Image 1 (cartoon, helix red, strand yellow):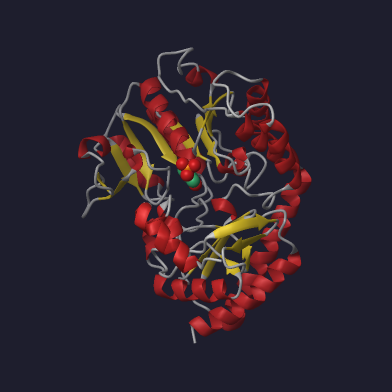
Image 2 (cartoon, protein in one colour):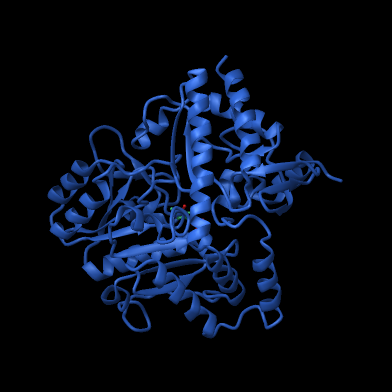
Length: 426
Ligand SMILES: *Cc1c(COP(=O)(O)O)cnc(C)c1O
């Protein structure tokens, strides 16, 4: 049997950094990533046979828990009929119907292979539909690795972003305008500075890629109003929050109707899928109905679509009630520990998604999140890992619960977590 360390050494020789997506490498917490050999329910096992209670859930998709028997059986059954056809299937229409029924702002939907693809297409469509090239990105929101989104705040008072990866041309991000999360005034300012130029405001309605940050009460409705006022589209990236925080995503909780929505993660039930959809009159601009190009050899893959369908079918009202109650259980436990021990931490949650910030002041945006004590977070992370709890290896990632997590699993987590935190802050 190989150890995690041996496997990581081997992988690093032939895969950049030993991983196929950077955060998996434990870069921000140090140490050796665990190579996962299998997963079931709320647990994952590493290559050394050690078991962990999983709070990553493949970064969101595994809302039913791992290896859900119904989904696994459906994937097995479906795969016997062929793996890919490159031609339409009835299943794709079923999944489209299921999405549209849950998210009323989505009137037409196109399936792609990842969240990244969905956001790239939605941005292209927003630009084409409005005939405008600029767009507003909210700092700290993540929309995959499309060039136009890979931008960070420049220095000083400038709102113009700079590429945050080599290889992204400055000319590509020169049309990406930045505003902080939860700051309506900043977005209004951009609309005034760039009249008639802004195609859309693009954001995660609940930010899940800088820890978890909830929108302030009037933020999303305020963005809706500004977009209407200035003729721009409002695009909600619900790749993480879609079917996670509620049956109809974050937009159903805050009762704000975006023009376009991007989806991924849960919609594929653990298989690679993304989707984007929205208003009929906008989606009708997509090829082959309209002139805006977007395509995919494996898009609408039958196995992935089936996994998504079987996942969504199990996400009924009762499921969301259970997820909410598990989330509430973790919340009250964590808040209790913070209060009992006087820990300098803060916590935010939406349904079965949560963020524990190593900072006592309420976190409103990326600037605040960057003020977290990442050194202490890394200590906490490793001590929890040692005790069999697999949390995201970064302060800036959310935690996820699944229907397979039991209250007794979570009680174990809360108890160990309180003990470890007391040590970390001793
Ligand atoms: C994960 C994520 C993406 C990217 O999806 P991939 O499938 O990893 O390409 C985009 N937006 C948000 C909000 C995400 O959480």
